[in-house]
Image (cartoon, rainbow, N blue to C red; front, side, top):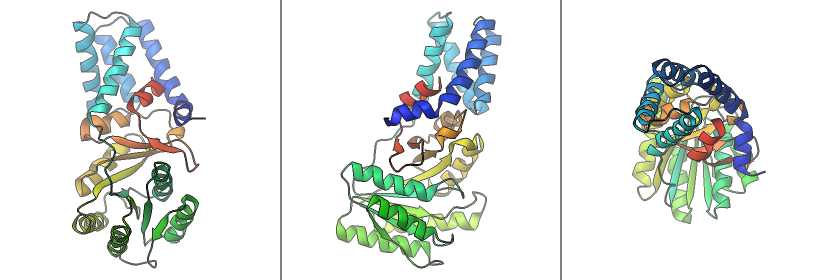
Length: 298
């Protein structure tokens, strides 16, 4: 089964939920103010934020009026097109090499697993990869990452538990520069986005990479659990303010019936989803495709 077959399967609940609501809406309302008000409510009910839902509906309404659309199928097609546009407006190109990727996020979203899957992704592209175990606080975090590194067959740089995470990154950068490695992926400790001292630690790690590895294309990616809903946007906002995020890795897509917050991340914060995960296997993480995602939920 290909990745996008898995994506469609994973988002079946989302498609059934949003699609059913839209069919009911088109059946009972002709296009007009009441229709657009209810369309906005449907989007909000699918975890699109209030401001983004209003923006989407405004775009749909303007185009529908201008193009004199009255058929529900055409409006669904228009909605799909506008949602793709919103995602593509924030898209970024895949990084150049060498690149450094720092994975951040709150506790329990699957950062370490994501590092292992990303390592596998780049290996499939023919790149050399090193991972850095900069989560030095969680018990057995380095051991867990070591298992993933062994499964992916990539090098790992690690220190003893309780070490300074910035020191791990310094050594990892020195190693990849010496060996000419294509991709460095840094695992970091989970941190609550409202703990300023932990966010300052992330800033320190960010500075180390920028200072020691200026030749690398440096991405800071926030791992978000797709089942989190609208709180995901709040998490992203705080992490973005701390370290200027470049994008999102979306995990557990197979566990959500909504997923609309992805559009809010793009429209409000300008943050694209770069990678999406739809399962537990090493290969169940791929580069995000905006058109496929919209097609899968609508």
